[in-house]
Length: 486
Image (cartoon, rainbow, N blue to C red):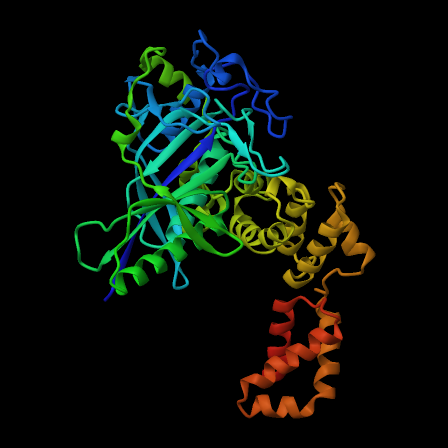
């Protein structure tokens, strides 16, 4: 039987406010346990929550960025369940009327060597508070409770079940991560829990309209774990059905050491949480004027920047999409372009997507942390354009610049001079090199004149070797053709 995979994601995005969503407690990561928990977070009798305006404004920003509806009035609800790290016995969330409704996220999906544009529809994004944390290690068989996270502001972003593979789910998650960090509403630190995903996974026979029974894999805090967990869960469900069993709706955890999911608890439905409007919080009213003020303060969005790069710089849709996957890379591109001019736009894009991206990935850093700053790269690319160095030599210079980690703006020129790497473009010097190569390789000359094209490449290789890689390739090719064909 052929199976179709159905995936929806719920992403908990920690907002970049200075304090919690309903109290004035700080949310600094790594603080000593229970040092950032106010009476509201501890659920002491008589305390009342007060809405954090900054959290609302970040939710509005997100809604505008994904072309969603911003609810003019939304309601907070109590989601009732009991865990030791939830002192109130309920979580303040949103249920029937969330602040952000609908929307979409588009991204590039690499498939069979080609990139296609995919769009995932969003169901909603709602504001809620995080729970505390249970600590099971180093407590002599007991469990410790740290309430520093209790009340941390979250925007939970829920998709429709639109994704059909783990690779597609990861591509969406990366696009969402890029967007929320681009907006500055989340720092995106997955190791610290600022951006974590729950994956709802089911399978169904190809052609079947009804969805299969889904399982939710909780708290995936890396893109690799997200992909591994989904792939394992898909295999588990298919094998279970093939063996005559049935999938049970449940919540599961992913064990990265064993690379498998395991049952955590039976999956609750909405009625199990006994949602009802929180009587301590009035409806959240968002006026058109408030939305307009937030919109005016927002940065240029990736989609608008992509369109501008295509229109103004002549880039392809693919190049523009790759460069705007990261705000740091997009701003780096713009900074280089301001120095080189639009005529070198394609060259700049190729270098950023090639050598620069490769070096950044190797060090695990973003473009704004690059040891080679935009001014240095711009000068290097100008030296290729004016014929001072070849593209091959430029790669050597770039590697040396990266290792040097100097902020000197003329570093490229200094390295070209000190290493004697200036390209040979003088016709007389090149002609002398060619004459020497032709005299030393009569067999290759004879083979070329007999119609063997490979012999020409061999002669070019010998000439480049004789020039120590410094000959201007295009000039060398033209002069050699002229010499051989007379």
